[in-house]
Image 1: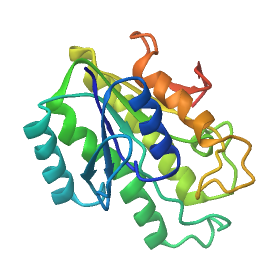
Image 2 (image 1 turned 45 degrees about the vertical axis):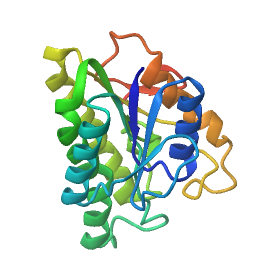
Image 3 (image 1 turned 90 degrees about the vertical axis):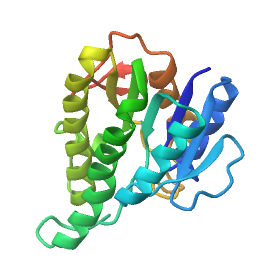
Image 4 (image 1 turned 60 degrees about the vertical axis):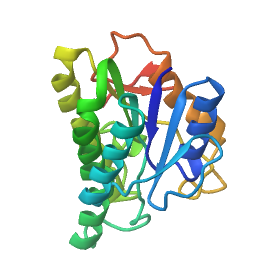
Length: 218
């Protein structure tokens, strides 16, 4: 049975991803900062911004499951909606990058020894990180997602010798605490593309950016 680790699993898209994965019969490790009990997986305390927290969490996974087949880097923050790049503070940018870029890298590096040959990493990105779609809506968030896409390419290169696939996915504008109630997509619709990329996408796909199960430009 596949073992799937999901970060940021306590709410929104992450929570729905866990629900859909559990419905597919996989072993779900639902990670969040609080480690609160999760209805669709084994709960795990994991703060992507805290190296010691990540180390402890991965040690727990190694002890209890011994492997990870899929890592879904979903944890993210949006701290600068409506701000301008001309007034964006370095502290806001630094905090955003710590969660949205360094966090996924830290988790991927730590879990890498547990990823079996043919494993998979899915980085949950955004159209805000696309060069072709980027606007001035949230500059720090946009920068962090562009950098996350670059991390995807780097990890995909590193994964080639062991057939570990690494891709980015844009779930779209989803009705979550981050996306707001005016978003056009439900959490179930947003999560579907993530679950597809984690479990069903062709194994030849790596180092790519997806939305609605199709490759999109960086």
